[in-house]
Image (cartoon, rainbow, N blue to C red):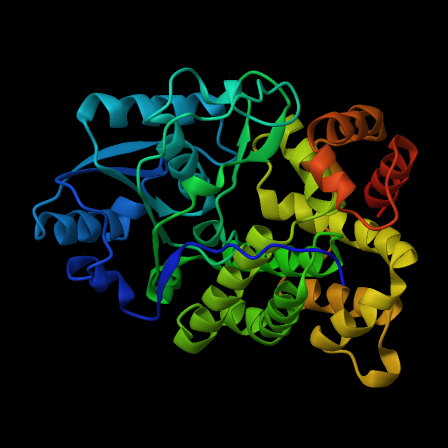
Length: 392
């Protein structure tokens, strides 16, 4: 058993209708001003979620300001803008509302609201400055509206450096949310494809957390449960978005994936996808993961085949099919059942000419994830994985 540490400081309020707990929970950070960080697409307004959150805060005497410029695959400039707004307005805490992108910007902005300079001065890895924040972050509350990223259960933010192809995860333990409110009812508005893609993100967080060299006993248990839950409920939620039970199960699977990120880590799949979506910022994270996953897991199956026995059973294989091949076959069936199939690299504008740059980017920017990958990885390994994925 590897040496490990257990640290999970976030209080979780979970369940259908739990958004209303913002109105009376004693665990809301103290203060009279909050900055709400949300996406630029307007979905939180259209579905009434932003108004509900503002109303619940106002009933407790908390005035709210809005930063709503977060785009998919968020960039460092958005973190710096949100942090500056929090400072100027004298915010007492920050609340992230929406999918993984606004939650990630909110986490990083909470750190930067109390520390000088741009966020990239503090990022560890790539061209980041590697500085350590001297001041404690603003308290952070997370309210997710999707079930995939698990951002509400860990302290890391995935951000791209503005104007560059560097995308990586960064954070400080003190920046973990003090409170996360996970209301599966907020996910009822997700359309089928977004449901499928976010569900696959949760699945891959769990699978990679189980394979990672940073795994520990708790993440093994949580990861296998999350894999089982996604396999058994994601097709159901894609087919019927109003299935409240399926939505609730997937929200817990997403939280479970976030716990895996907090206590273990992802591996080469996320490392390569970060390079991919940094090169193609309009590519949804889930699309990139689904495109790369079969090739990545074929590689990992050769490095740690014994880990795929339990994973394949959790994914729905019979005992006589347990193992790497059974896992890959079950994964293909799940993607097909969710209407994902095999995404075409050509549809995303990717060609084999992109392979060297993508592999080099992953090597230079996401070395932490490569180090957690069983068997070790070099540039040629990543190029072979990408060649495999782009040949599908």
